[in-house]
Image (cartoon, rainbow, N blue to C red):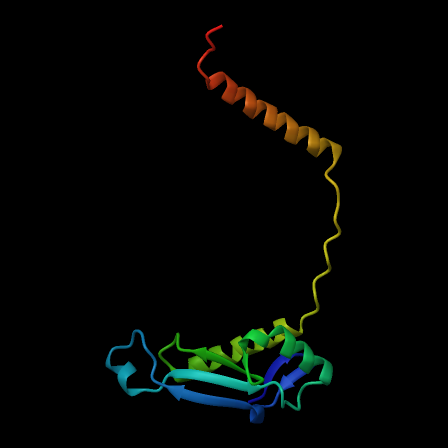
Length: 140
Protein backbone atom coordinates (compact mmCIF):
# COMPACT_ATOMS: atom_id res chain seq x y z
CA UNK A 1 0.00 0.00 0.00
CA UNK A 2 1.67 3.21 -1.19
CA UNK A 3 1.71 6.20 1.15
CA UNK A 4 0.17 9.37 -0.29
CA UNK A 5 1.94 12.33 1.33
CA UNK A 6 0.76 15.06 -1.04
CA UNK A 7 -0.51 15.26 -4.60
CA UNK A 8 3.13 15.63 -5.73
CA UNK A 9 4.61 12.84 -3.58
CA UNK A 10 3.67 9.21 -3.09
CA UNK A 11 6.04 6.91 -1.25
CA UNK A 12 6.02 3.39 -2.73
CA UNK A 13 5.32 0.58 -0.28
CA UNK A 14 8.54 -1.14 -1.39
CA UNK A 15 10.59 1.70 0.18
CA UNK A 16 8.90 1.40 3.58
CA UNK A 17 10.24 -0.98 6.19
CA UNK A 18 8.34 -2.43 9.13
CA UNK A 19 9.42 -3.86 12.49
CA UNK A 20 7.07 -5.27 15.11
CA UNK A 21 7.63 -5.86 18.81
CA UNK A 22 5.72 -6.28 22.03
CA UNK A 23 4.08 -3.15 23.27
CA UNK A 24 3.79 -1.88 26.83
CA UNK A 25 0.70 -0.38 28.37
CA UNK A 26 -2.91 -1.59 28.73
CA UNK A 27 -4.11 -4.87 27.33
CA UNK A 28 -3.50 -7.37 30.10
CA UNK A 29 -2.19 -10.76 29.03
CA UNK A 30 -2.83 -9.84 25.40
CA UNK A 31 0.14 -7.44 25.50
CA UNK A 32 2.50 -10.20 26.57
CA UNK A 33 1.73 -12.38 23.56
CA UNK A 34 1.18 -10.10 20.57
CA UNK A 35 3.59 -7.91 18.63
CA UNK A 36 1.39 -4.83 18.37
CA UNK A 37 4.08 -2.12 18.59
CA UNK A 38 4.99 -0.89 15.12
CA UNK A 39 8.16 0.78 13.84
CA UNK A 40 7.97 2.23 10.35
CA UNK A 41 11.15 3.39 8.69
CA UNK A 42 11.94 5.04 5.37
CA UNK A 43 15.36 5.77 3.89
CA UNK A 44 15.16 9.35 2.65
CA UNK A 45 18.73 9.39 1.37
CA UNK A 46 18.16 6.48 -1.05
CA UNK A 47 14.51 7.05 -1.97
CA UNK A 48 13.65 7.09 -5.66
CA UNK A 49 10.31 8.85 -5.01
CA UNK A 50 11.99 12.18 -4.18
CA UNK A 51 13.52 14.80 -6.39
CA UNK A 52 16.95 16.12 -5.41
CA UNK A 53 15.40 19.36 -4.09
CA UNK A 54 12.92 17.45 -1.95
CA UNK A 55 15.64 15.14 -0.66
CA UNK A 56 17.94 17.98 0.42
CA UNK A 57 15.02 19.84 2.00
CA UNK A 58 13.97 16.79 4.02
CA UNK A 59 17.51 15.92 5.04
CA UNK A 60 18.11 19.43 6.38
CA UNK A 61 14.72 19.99 8.03
CA UNK A 62 14.38 16.52 9.57
CA UNK A 63 18.07 16.16 10.32
CA UNK A 64 17.67 15.68 14.07
CA UNK A 65 15.20 12.81 13.56
CA UNK A 66 17.33 10.97 11.02
CA UNK A 67 19.85 8.22 11.63
CA UNK A 68 22.02 7.67 8.54
CA UNK A 69 19.33 9.20 6.33
CA UNK A 70 16.57 6.94 7.71
CA UNK A 71 13.53 8.32 9.50
CA UNK A 72 11.78 6.04 11.99
CA UNK A 73 8.26 6.44 13.36
CA UNK A 74 6.83 4.28 16.15
CA UNK A 75 3.24 3.65 17.20
CA UNK A 76 2.06 1.64 20.17
CA UNK A 77 -1.03 3.56 21.28
CA UNK A 78 -3.56 0.97 20.10
CA UNK A 79 -3.98 -2.69 21.07
CA UNK A 80 -4.27 -3.71 17.43
CA UNK A 81 -1.22 -4.00 15.18
CA UNK A 82 -3.33 -2.92 12.21
CA UNK A 83 -4.40 0.31 13.92
CA UNK A 84 -0.82 0.98 14.98
CA UNK A 85 0.27 0.50 11.35
CA UNK A 86 -2.30 3.07 10.23
CA UNK A 87 -1.15 5.46 12.96
CA UNK A 88 2.50 5.06 11.97
CA UNK A 89 1.69 5.71 8.30
CA UNK A 90 -0.27 8.83 9.23
CA UNK A 91 2.58 10.10 11.45
CA UNK A 92 5.16 9.56 8.70
CA UNK A 93 2.97 11.32 6.13
CA UNK A 94 2.53 14.30 8.48
CA UNK A 95 6.28 14.51 9.19
CA UNK A 96 7.22 14.39 5.51
CA UNK A 97 4.49 16.88 4.55
CA UNK A 98 5.68 19.28 7.27
CA UNK A 99 9.27 18.86 6.08
CA UNK A 100 8.31 19.70 2.51
CA UNK A 101 5.98 22.59 3.39
CA UNK A 102 7.15 26.01 2.20
CA UNK A 103 8.65 28.37 4.72
CA UNK A 104 6.13 30.80 6.24
CA UNK A 105 6.37 34.42 5.15
CA UNK A 106 8.80 36.33 7.32
CA UNK A 107 7.37 38.96 9.63
CA UNK A 108 7.93 42.56 8.66
CA UNK A 109 9.14 44.61 11.60
CA UNK A 110 6.86 47.53 12.47
CA UNK A 111 7.05 50.32 15.01
CA UNK A 112 4.45 50.77 17.75
CA UNK A 113 1.73 53.27 16.90
CA UNK A 114 1.34 56.57 18.70
CA UNK A 115 -1.89 55.35 20.31
CA UNK A 116 -0.31 52.17 21.63
CA UNK A 117 2.54 54.18 23.14
CA UNK A 118 0.05 56.51 24.88
CA UNK A 119 -1.98 53.55 26.21
CA UNK A 120 1.15 51.84 27.53
CA UNK A 121 2.36 54.99 29.31
CA UNK A 122 -1.12 55.68 30.74
CA UNK A 123 -1.31 52.16 32.12
CA UNK A 124 2.14 52.52 33.65
CA UNK A 125 1.21 55.81 35.32
CA UNK A 126 -2.08 54.33 36.65
CA UNK A 127 -0.18 51.40 38.12
CA UNK A 128 2.45 53.74 39.59
CA UNK A 129 -0.29 55.87 41.20
CA UNK A 130 -1.94 52.77 42.69
CA UNK A 131 1.34 51.63 44.23
CA UNK A 132 2.13 55.14 45.48
CA UNK A 133 -1.22 55.32 47.30
CA UNK A 134 -0.51 52.01 49.07
CA UNK A 135 2.63 53.41 50.71
CA UNK A 136 2.70 54.61 54.26
CA UNK A 137 2.32 58.41 54.40
CA UNK A 138 5.56 60.28 54.77
CA UNK A 139 6.49 61.97 58.06
CA UNK A 140 6.27 65.44 56.48
